[in-house]
Image (cartoon, rainbow, N blue to C red; front, side, top):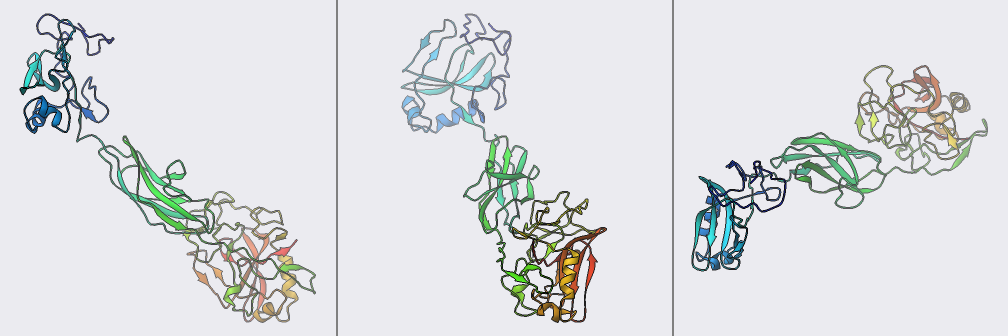
Length: 433
């Protein structure tokens, strides 16, 4: 006999003396529930109690072997194994099924043959069949939904989900996953967003413009990973600005004939189709320049924020990047140069030379020049709102000025070079290198 719950071998232990158990001393706490010691059933299942087995017997159409087989469980006549000598008995003649219920030195079982069926007590050294019962209290998969996608830019978007039930097991990870194919999983692009139940949000970055994506929230517990409903969205379009050259005969410089992001050359100072995009100084064409892009107050610590949101700083020096980087936009090969290949941001001197060639030092002169510069306004660094659209023009240069950068400004009465904080969104007109 074994003196422990685990004999350490796979032999059938016989015992010819009372209390006819394979273990000495006996242990009444074996097989008790889903987490019970030595539970032989698969995960989430357990031995039934005597009451549960008897309820099944009471539901049979006849109280015998025929009723056992006609029941949903289709119980066969598997016989038993003798606890004294290990021989097989009653195979094909009767069924013996253990319950987890103890009865003094014995344990309770369900017995049936061709004429009868009843609950009985059995020596524990005997071998009887086991039919496992699913534990209704065992954990299940989490339940969750996927949020509608918001703050959609050309390269970023925000979604999330709501874990409404943890399935009886703690949610250890949750987040969203996305793909250009339906039914994405965590094997595709994904981002985690905490743990537990409740609502959460998460951001998708590195997306491609004008592309349809599918997103699902996910939650993981001990049972596995479950996904919420699928939501689809399409990223914003970044218009590739047509490259047409125009030359100023006075300065000899060759420029693009329209602002970056504009769909046409200005037909007037207030031609909205010629306004184009509004860039924060030093940023690449990552989607933030679109006039309706979402905003964020989180500053970037690198040259590439990893999203297309317009960044709103809350304190001096009012730059989208912390720390500042004076080496952005410097020349045709400069970091984050948003201009087409072979073009770059003009320096302050080059922009000022254009201004000095105008017929009048104001909006009228700007539009009458070969560049036909419109009054596209600017985007405010404090809240991302548009200002002075249709009245003033603001054009970045590549030149830095301390913590500021230099720009060309003009309105109905004047035009001059000025300095500005770098978080403003201003127009860009590219110069051929």
